[in-house]
Image (cartoon, rainbow, N blue to C red; front, side):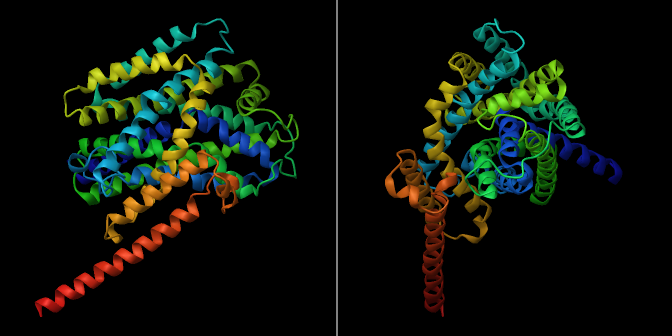
Amino acid sequence: MNKTNLNEKSKMDFMVIGFAIFSMLFGAGNLIFPPFLGFMTGSAWIVGFIGYVLADIILGVSGIMTSLDHDYEKDGAVSISSRVDKRIGLLLGLTMITCIGPAVVIPRTAATTFEISILPLLPNFNPLVFSIIFFLIVIALTITKSKVVDVIGKVLTPILLVSLAILIIKGIATPIGDMSQVPQIENNVFAEGIAQGYQTMDALGAVALAALVMNSIISKGYTNRAEKRKILIKSNAVAAIFLILVYGGLCYIGATASTSLDPEIGQTLLLTTLTHLIMGYWGKVLLAIIVFFACLTTAVGLTSVAAEYYEEVSKGRLSYKVLVVAICAISTVISTVGVSNIIKVAGPLLDIIYPVAVTLIVLTLMSNKIKSNAVFNISAIVACLFGVMNVLKVGFIQSLPLAEVGLSWVIPVLIVSVISIVVTSSKSNKGEKLKDTQIS
C-alpha cells in the first residue's frame, strides 16, 4: 500500500473511530443538560458552557486516553485499574461495569427512549414490547464483536449527527426569543456549568469504552505505540469537536428561551418544549429520532464492553455472544421500571464510584511520573470515602470547598494525592541513593 493510500486509510479510520466515540458518549442525558444550562444562564451561557466542556468533554476524552499504555491482556479490561491493588481493581471494575451495564445505564437507554421518543407519539404503546424490540436491535448490532465500532461510526452516528444538525441549525436561524440578562441560578455560572457537566458522569462510560476503542484501533493494523497514540488523539479530537459543536448549539438554543418559558420548568419538559417551539409537530418526530439513535449507540457500545468484561472475568467460561443476550435480557426487564426509579436506586452508588473513577483517570494520565502504586491506592480509597460521606450527607462535607456543585471530594483527594506523591518519591529517591552508595 503506497503512502497516499495509507494516509487515506488513516483518515477514514480516525474519522470512523471519532464518530463512534462521539455517539457512545452522547446519550440522552447529554441532550438534556446543555439546553437546561443555557436556559438557566441566559446571556452568560458561554461562561457556563466552558465549565460544562471541562467537566464533561475533557474528562470524557481523558477517560478514552487512559487506554494508550494499558496492557489489556495483562491488567484487565478497566484501563484505570492497572496501578491499584488487584482486589480494589476487581471491585472497581465489577461495580463500574455493572452500573454502566445491565444494572443501570443500559436499561436506562431503553427507558429514556420510550419516555421521550415513543410515549409522545404513541401514548398507548406497551413499554415491555418496546424494550424487547429495542434490545433485539442492540443484540443484532453487538453480537459480532469486531464490527461494533464500525457499525456505530459508519452507520448510526451519521444519522444522529444529521438529525442534530437539522434541529440546531433551525434553532439558531430562528431563535425562540431573547436571552435573559440575569442568570436564574444562585451558583456562579461557571461553577454551574461544571456541575451540569459532572452530572453526565461521562468519564465513567469513557473508561469502559476505552477498551472497545483501543481494540478497534489495533484491529485496523495500528500496533506500535506511536501509531496508536496518533490515531487515538485524532479520534478523540474528532469526537471532542463534534461534542462541542452539538452541546454548544443546544446550550445556545436553551439560552434563547430563557425569557420565554417558566423558570421552574423541568429538564425533560424543557427539551420537548424547545423542539416543539423550533419545529412544531416535526420537532417532536425529530427529537424521537435523535433520542432513539443517541440511546441506541450508547446501548450498543456499553453492551459490547460489559459482555467482553464479564467474559474476561469468567475466564472464558461465559462466551461473549451468550453474555450479550443475557445483558440485553436483564436490561429489558429492568428498563420497564422507568427512568426515575432506575436513577433513584442507582444514583447513590454512582455518586460513590464516580469520584474514584475521575481520580484514577487523572493519576493514570500521569502514570509515567508516579513511581509508587501506593499513590493510586490511597487516592482511590480517600475518593471512595468522600463519595460515601457525600451520599450520607455527613455534616462537615457541605462546608468543604466546591460542595455547592457536588465536588466536595476534589480538594481533600488532591491534597492526599500530592502528599502521597511527595512522600513516596522521597522514599524512592532515598532508596536509590542508598543503593548507589552500597554499589560504590
